[in-house]
Length: 347
Ligand code: FA5
Image (cartoon, rainbow, N blue to C red; front, side):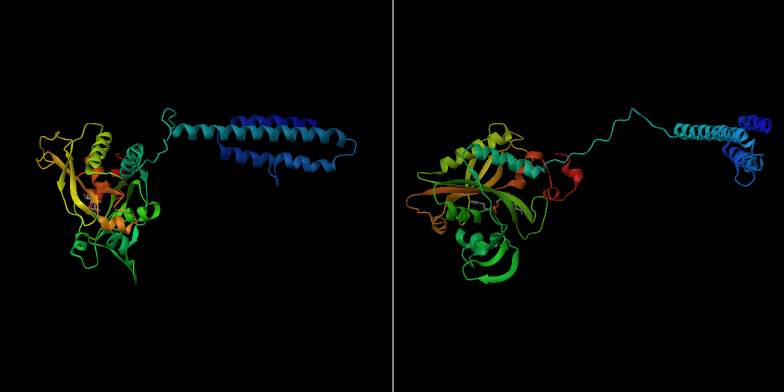
């Protein structure tokens, strides 16, 4: 029996050496270790028939032979598996020099970038930043600004009305057509003196084109104090625009009409592209139309609860969206709120 076991072990190891593939290995494993008819299994089964004196000698020897053969099969299996893996990896191209994926970091929208810059400059000049509701009452958007009901001046700004019942004083609710309603709201809340700007979203019911949108941003300015004149406005705007564009900007006034200021005016600044010489952008005038402004009308001061015998001041309103277009040379306003990342990522 001892010899049989030795022969079996030698034969198994020899046969294993000749095996070249996994299927061959599995067939050979069945031949030796198969539960039903494997040579090793059969020997283990026959141990019970040995004479009692032989059992303690042959039993451990048979176990050892079985373990050696099982171990040899296991090793062979592992060597095939490793070879398989190496083959697979060598097929897959793995370039360790490729730079890792860079996570995209979002950035601030050009409108917000310029708004922050405007706020920073005006803050440096002592102005506070105010906010007001985008859904506004007719009273604040028009009446308090000296535009009575049925006055033709209402037609200057086409309005989105919100379906809600009329309030005896405040009228219907509208999407504000301008940031000017915050003038009266701020005066009511803080009284005089005042020095504020109000950046915010405004809405008008109009057909869109390259320079008109139904949703756009304005910046309102309001300064109320004693002995205030338009000379202060000219100085503040010249300083603001020069800081914003990083070069000396010249401003000029032209007469203009807005019901809530008297006198009313328009402010232009010297074209930055041609330094006032005249080009396509400034329509060869050397000037860029920038904003409406004027001395705050007495009726508006009254609506805000400010005593016009002691205080006076000026207000202005410019289109932030148009300013962004000028700053970045954007030729269609609709691109700004279009939500197209290919556009937004350029700034
Ligand atoms: C006003 O809205 C006045 N509230 C400005 C003002 C304030 C005057 C205080 C006097 C005192 P206007 O309608 O001109 O004015 O609009 C101001 C700016 O908003 C315009 O110069 C323009 O830059 C911008 N704007 C007006 N309509 C549109 C539009 N549809 N799309 C984009 N920008 C617009």
